[in-house]
Amino acid sequence: MRTCLKKSGILAAAIAVIVIAGCKNTAEEDKKTGTSNAPEGFVEVPGTSIAGTESWIPSSEVFVSGRVLEINSFYMSDHEVTRAEYKEVIGSVPGIADAYDKDGHKLTGDAAGKNPVNTVSWYDALVYCNKLSIKESLIPCYKINGSTNPDDWGAVPTSSDSTWNAATCDFDADGYRLPTEAEWEWAARGGENYIYAGSNDVNVVAWYTSNTNNTGTRDVKTKKKNGYGLYDMSGNVCEWCWDRYGNISNTTPNTGSASGSGRCLRGGSWCYSADRARVAYRSSNAPGGSSFSLGFRLVRSAN
Image 1 (cartoon, rainbow, N blue to C red):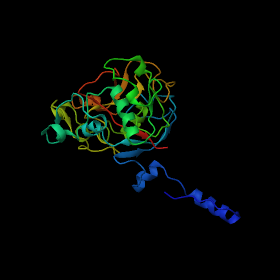
Image 2 (cartoon, rainbow, N blue to C red):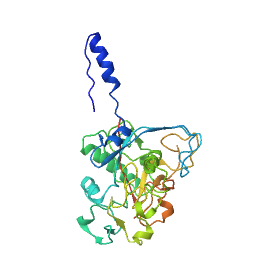
Image 3 (cartoon, rainbow, N blue to C red):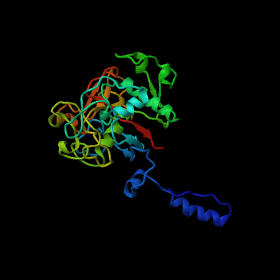
Image 4 (cartoon, rainbow, N blue to C red):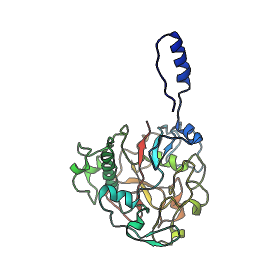
């Protein structure tokens, strides 16, 4: 990125105008030039202004007629959080599905470290995000009961909890968080018009029931990435989003419905059909619930 220097004097001011005019660095330009300020393992997803008048292929239940959205550019992990990454931050991994490599060989112990973590609740994901932010000296995004330190939150609930459900998110913080549902779908589409994230052929981009035989997860980043460089957006494990789950209308804010007991899930899973792997498919789960099919992916503000 160029640096714009301020100088005094009329000539210097004229030079500054010329230099400033050339100081433009967007996610779209980064994509074209192959440069980016994204952290390691992340890609920069370009922002967009959605007027609510667009036609979407495939059609969307999130980008609906009349819904005006401003999606700022953001960094998204190019892979789902792995078992090894989760263990490094939390110290252990939860009860998990069987793990396999892309060729169908079963993996155990540390050998399964590159498979996505699963059996994590929405509450678990919030804890991970803030703990990782604190570990890397970033500003945590989530606050529960007045604190951003998960050590103050108490034990992670295993069923719906009103205090944890009232968690707030500071979207201006530079720490890690879950994507909003709009961010997730915008990223999954990858600037393309495919049914699945990166292809119209589900087998090219997704691990799902037919090509895993319902045996377990597969190591991440072994299928084709989408147009923004993101892997497994259509399958391996379903991914938690920040939003409450509900019907979306033209008055729904950027961060989703204001009410609803469930939290949004997006993307397919190793034990789900191809239908659920579509970029437009929506589902939900109770925030305290977990299963072999559930995992998550991280984002960070790029501003």
